Image (tube, rainbow, N blue to C red; front, side, top):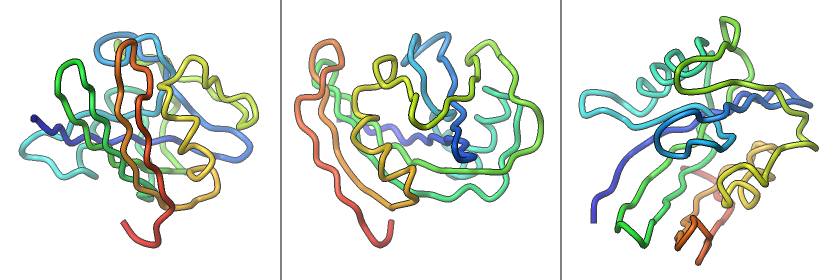
Length: 155
């Protein structure tokens, strides 16, 4: 089983969060944070900075890791390990790119129906600055077959 290491960063300036509509590739048509695969020569945090620049034309300051989630996709045997970060400060103006179209949402209006189905589980911990680990198993049509999520002291 192949494991892919990725990162995800969500900008949170209470009472709003910045999400991006994925325009192509894996996850297209869904609102999500910004991020992607960690290349062989990159660190997780180095990759995070590169992805934010490529996807939203911004540079985050002091991202904080809040979660590590593992996603298993039954249909193809793929496992994705996602390192989830939060940032509140950034440089630049979020702009649309070939890959993402950024938009601010109030936290009580997060578009969960148009996001990955696991987001509704861990987002409350994220918004409260709680650290968490978990695993989600996806079946047909990206439905959640199994979930395991816990708040942790350290990552």
